[in-house]
Length: 206
Picture (tube, rainbow, N blue to C red):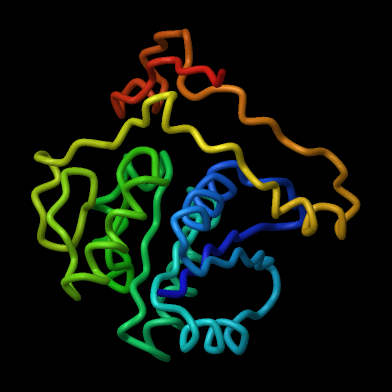
């Protein structure tokens, strides 16, 4: 299985710690993984058509600010190779999974909660059975969202990231590396998305 992680940016390119963690974890599991950075200000159709035929799974970073671009990218990929499985994840994706899949039928599934282990389990299942699994932390078209539970990693499962995205940052004169010190928060703010997701327990690295 070949896996691509797409990071959609504007002018500012800094490390995406979530993608770094997923990349590192999947590599250690023996998968063929790549990270690509696309600038949402430039046409990407030709590049994406090439990506679509070379990867079995494509994970796309999504937020409120780039959702429309992500939808267009997913449509382009599916038009070129329908068998390519497209997934999204993160806080915004977890909170808005139902609405996102309603707006973009080209996305195959949403990883709810923290993504490293769930993504690896989905890919492993697909390799063995050639279909999508029925996991609590995977939301697909037609699923009952109310029965889904976001995945929360234990601190013992944290992976030391490989910082592969620093190359992209350096090319854009961005020389700061980011540290993954912990996940969650010690606070309990009612407006916080982490609290809403039920994954806000603070977990520090050793």
